[in-house]
Image (cartoon, rainbow, N blue to C red; front, top):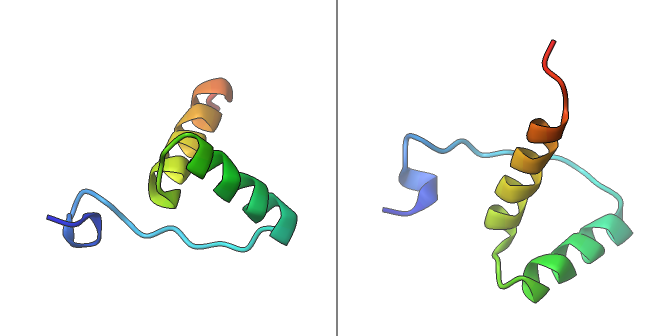
Length: 53
């Protein structure tokens, strides 16, 4: 089943500066990840480093 059809996944959309997108896309390619996997890893890492309220 594709992630878009998996009820355990939700679509995330947003706008970021073009250079940041290009850098992130290159990072994903260098790490053999698709953009979705890269976003999942980045958000997970961010949430793990931020204290909860």
